[in-house]
Amino acid sequence: MAPIVLYSGPLSMFGAKAEIALREKGVPFELVMVPFAAGDRYDPVHPEVMRINPKRQVPVLVHDGLEIFDSTLIFEYLEDAFPEPALWPKDAVPRAQARLLELKSDEIVFMNIVRLFGLEDTPQHPVAVDAVAKAYRHYAELDANLAGRDFIAGAFSYADIALFMAQFYGERKGAMMNETTPRLLDWRTRVLARPAVRTVIGRMGAWLTSQRRESPGYIADAVAASR
Ligand SMILES: N[C@@H](CCC(=O)N[C@@H](CS)C(=O)NCC(=O)O)C(=O)O
Image 1: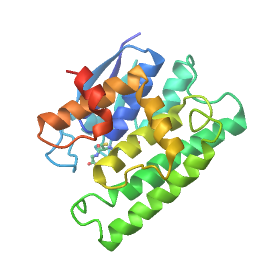
Image 2: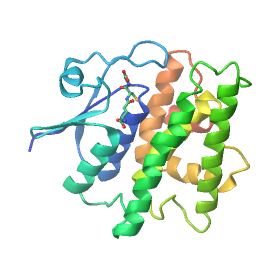
Image 3: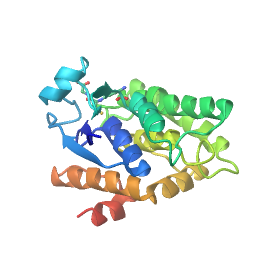
């Protein structure tokens, strides 16, 4: 079987989702880092990304003749192709609930965080206030949901990977998790302790530092370990 190739980018939160999943599965892969334009506006230029993904976005995954894009679709392929260790719950209802949580991280938490891009220095801007309020509303729901659980869908799952990456951007852009959601803070510590997560987030933090950009304090150990 040909090795998996993952096209990602140094600051790609969706690429990081796919890479963390590959590492959690213990599947060997080749990582191609696609150069991005400066700032947070991405501009992948790799010819393979442009050929495979009409949206010109990373992540893109190539495996044995299969060429797919979109981090959530990549999760589904990895689960089908490499069932162990399982990263979705087994039964239909908890599985659907976990998938919904994964989708909400991308499409509710992260989409509100995207609204903060460019407003980092004007947190009182009405758009920023609204975006943070919406992200916090979701954090509060997740915090309540974590009562009696270590991870947001029970066992560690793709839903945790997606939320971890969304909140990482929230931390950088002004929707930081705080003591009003203490279970989420503990959850974050648990997720960050996973070697797959530490590796990917540590390298991302080191990249930010190399560009003289700030990286959240809570990943400092992972960044130091990645050097
Ligand atoms: N829904 C897609 C989103 C992918 C995405 O937005 N990728 C960003 C990098 S994190 C990108 O390549 N953006 C470049 C662009 O939109 O031109 C996924 O889950 O993979």
